Length: 358
Image (cartoon, rainbow, N blue to C red; front, side, top):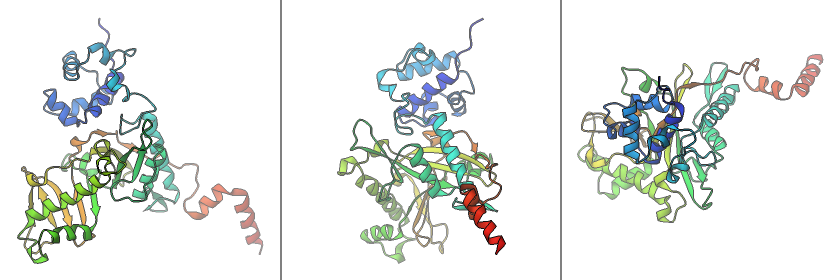
């Protein structure tokens, strides 16, 4: 009887190769002649063993030998080595390791102690600013002074002057991805810049009274503003960031305590391939739908200028398994008083004792 094919090693190498090529799960499935990406997702997670036909297909696609894909002692070719080196940049040159995800999970869990942005009964949960801090800490990144595009910058070790950007987003909408009856889309709030958008629209000669009549032009203008904003930070425009290897990093969560990470390319759909329209004559928000009537963008000019982008979860370059925060069992209570007592027990209880005597 032949030995079963290795699962975890093959899945790690497959995910590294896919990320190196900038392919989503769905795009890789299409290149390999599959109609859905679920099988590939399970392979990358080490939940299934690959079939011989699948291994042969991957070997042909990436011009590798089957031994390079399956044997522990054989590494990927030189152009792929960065994907498996532990000192390379997570999310940029390779997928994050299990250890990095665990550190991220545990750091997020600390915000249940009353310091998190989101109120949850007597305790708190991590919010978007907490998420940014955790990503920066785990990846040894830096928070830029100007957050017009990126929330975390990672330094290239070989070229210290070069940076890679992560635009961190967080939404309590995991149900859109996990529940079968929902649309499977991830919310990315791209911008809250009503003034910048409206100025660009006026520059096109479009007045407020013409918004409904010139919806298609407005849609094109909105995405052009986003494109130019990214390009201003690019190394090709005297900036310091390699835009082509920078990403959105989205943390979705639910009130039931489930969390999942998604990584998306910065590239958006072409604006002129979408149908831009206002839902009804009195509507103030603009929709952008694809050819199959899927909602891809929404713009709310009167609500802070929010431009919301809705890529499908299958378009993610990488996604984590669903995880949960670690309970703070060692903390008897939450809030400022409980934290002070936990961190400074001797001083706290001494002060409390003096107060009780008076």
